[in-house]
Image (tube, rainbow, N blue to C red; front, side, top):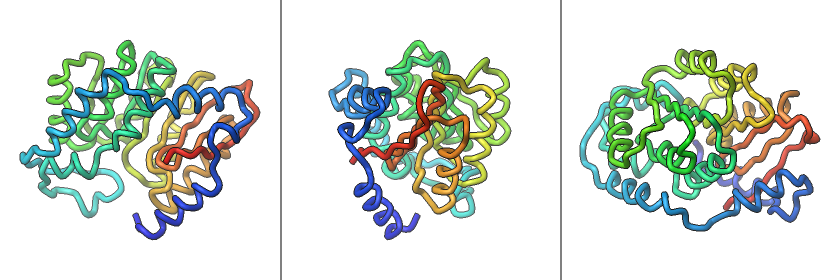
Length: 262
């Protein structure tokens, strides 16, 4: 990602986005007020953030298998776990927001594409402990570390699958009766992102929420986000710059919101 382009996009977003006071949809206003802007401390966050700090000091090395954007650079590279912990994990502010969304909607099932070291997965698990979580990671050695972390925090509602998203995700969609909560945090390419979006459409419903990570990652990702927003099944989107939220509520007038989350 070009740093100059990133900051230009960030500045444009800041100028064109609203707080909750510029939003007239009751559903979106309440979501912003009660969930997005809820920065209160949650009890489950402390052990996860302690684990994050431990991972930042973990000098063990793993061999990276990267099937998404950046694979030409990263495939086969040996990296220290602490490097991944510092550079590849969702920052606390975003991981906590995703957890609050899971807590708000209490989905029967959660799908996460992109486990990495499992920090965001743990947030989802703790915030919505009645959900069945299926998390998919392309790199076997990274997935192994994530599963170690799940054991360390004693969670039992996470199912980890390792392999290519393009193969595993359609299988998961086929298995589930419906898509309740989907977080796509991997393979930051336009065609892959749109494929996952279209793959899940037959199983979405009025209570579904899709979360797309890094919607400003590249021009291709911005184009994918635009196509998703324009899709006739999509009724409400919320662009938080770092992530994009997608809803399918038939009682809502079709609207796209930009909300400040800085």
